[in-house]
Length: 112
Ligand code: 5GP
Ligand code: ZN
Image (cartoon, rainbow, N blue to C red; front, side, top):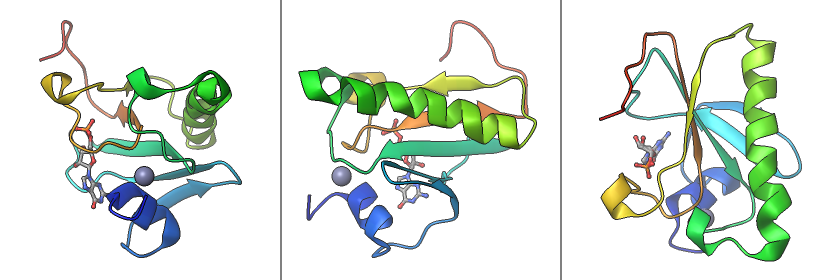
């Protein structure tokens, strides 16, 4: 997707602080962190939002979670919140699926 900022980050056209990359996934620090540790995990395949995923995308979306667990495990982070916002009303601002990893502070429930 030529106008997608996260596709541009994957391609290296927009700089980012990369924390993880493999064949299918890319993870980087959020530019506006909401916790001491705030990482975004994205599939390299452009999928705009959870509600738009197709049958064949299930494993890409599932892999976001196993990638997040791996990243946290490698950093010995045991307590963290994983968030996906779907749609503008839920707080989604970038329309390339991303899993937020938030850690390093206490979290409230329900979230704001
Ligand atoms: P959303 O609100 O869509 O769930 O989350 C989008 C996230 O992407 C936000 O937390 C925002 O700070 C982050 N973000 C937006 N643009 C950039 C960027 O250019 N670089 C990085 N590293 N993060 C970004
Ligand atoms: Zn994209």
